[in-house]
Amino acid sequence: MSCLNSVMLTTNSFLSLITLMSVAQKPTLLINSDQIEEGQSRGFIIDNTNLFIVRHQGQVVAYHNSCPHRKQPLEWLPNQFLDDDKQFIQCASHGALFTIEQGLCISGPCHRKSLTRLSVEERDDKIYCIIPLG
Ligand code: FES
Image 1: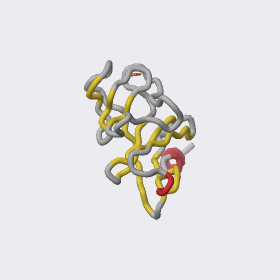
Image 2 (image 1 turned 60 degrees about the vertical axis):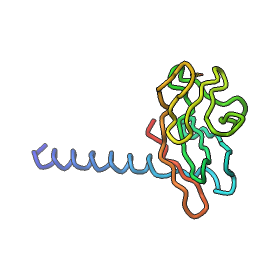
Image 3 (image 1 turned 30 degrees about the vertical axis):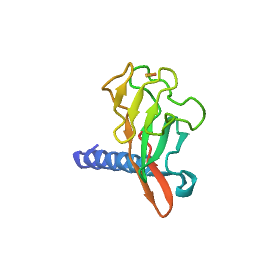
Image 4 (image 1 turned 180 degrees about the vertical axis):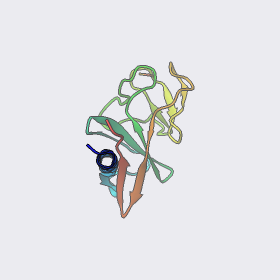
């Protein structure tokens, strides 16, 4: 194989990888905007990614549904990720509290650790999330 063929093969492989990555990371439709009201949360499992969204102060945020200290899901019932006052994300097992805006644990066994945030986008009355590569 000539040097030029090797370069072209490498370039084609690289372009295929880039294409694959861009397809795998394109925004995934979660729900319509009117399906999550202020103070509500929703859980999803998409391509083996367990995640949830919260609408808080009009904005939607998304996190991996995995506590930073035990890597276990947080909800106490399906789609129930918030405390009674709907001011914090709460771990059902330990009562740990996380800020909705940053996912920072302010109380509990994972104090000062954070949930892993995901990119979320709301446009045209729909909510999309970038699902990371497995
Ligand atoms: S699993 Fe970490 S606080 Fe509950």
